[in-house]
Image (cartoon, rainbow, N blue to C red; front, side, top):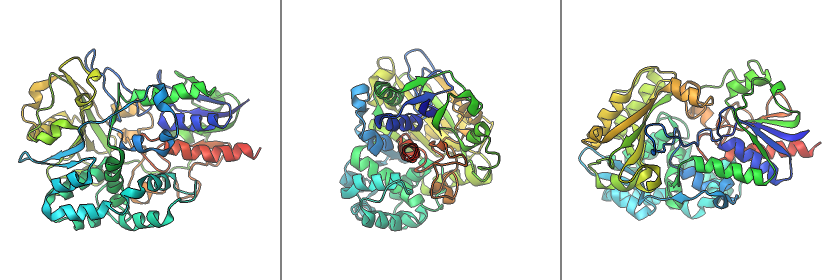
Length: 469
């Protein structure tokens, strides 16, 4: 009998498996798709030689993850590549604010009226970042805080809505960039703890950047898989699990799945019925015959580019998709251009690029034209560079990854109390009604992103159970 079976070979499932295997437990992973990866995959979606990431591409939380940093993943081929700028936020006049590794460079891009306010915002936390991120991403009660004073101060700053935090800024440049950071979790700007979301992304960039993985996000998943196999773990692909009886006997079962799928497989009935799924994304992957012709020079050298003319425009787009049930007229876009720093992703002189905008949960329309009209505002002539495109709305995104219910790439709305307390209001979010069944997906704390910390935290709950008998 195995000690633990993990269902789902996304970053959290693989991390949970590694953490258990490192402690001497026998582990096997079962994945429904023909490759490992979940939200961290790389595929030729458009033309031969163009390697795209169907979901996550830039990894500020991955490079800062306490779980990943404790593993020798570089021995297994993982290499982080850093663009000249982690992120740029261009404006229609051709200027840009930037999120640079340097706090001073970032503050200077906001202009003299907000430079000091930004420095004062990040100054208390950046020197203690490694401790803070460990405490922040290990919550809830999986570990005692290493620096409770800094964590409490962070909570006082970040728990209010981001709209409160942005009152520190006087001009649009800082407000728009910070609003864009919050939008990465597809949460309306006035939600609880959204200030913390923006602050975490900013601090992550200053601490270690917003890199891409050489060769694509698949490299992260492949490194975790290779490490797991060296530790004696097994990985089985093309293995769809419909019932617990489909799995071999084990002392514990750990699910890197949505709560909905777990309830169906384990027979939990209505246990997770109050869990909410949020707005979705419409994503377009592009093969380009040259770099994106951004008007703002800073955007040409950035790994990630946020596209939204103002805080108001960004807020309106999020509100439309999350609360009004309609696709916004002027979408806020998150875009990533991996081949700016990794030429192996496309044929010589050509580029891969992706962009997504927010749409309502389960939306079935075509958002391509709206996305490209928005891109043309900031990169005139963009459409002329397009060799091929691969579009994915909510139905296609959900078909690619069953965890993305209705096209929600956060595996559950990251808004309200559910941003902090997921998938239920409980002090033990990784346990379930069955004492031998656990959940470790992005539906559990600390939530979405390729960082493995949900798997790391869940593994602690599992090995406590296994050591008990």
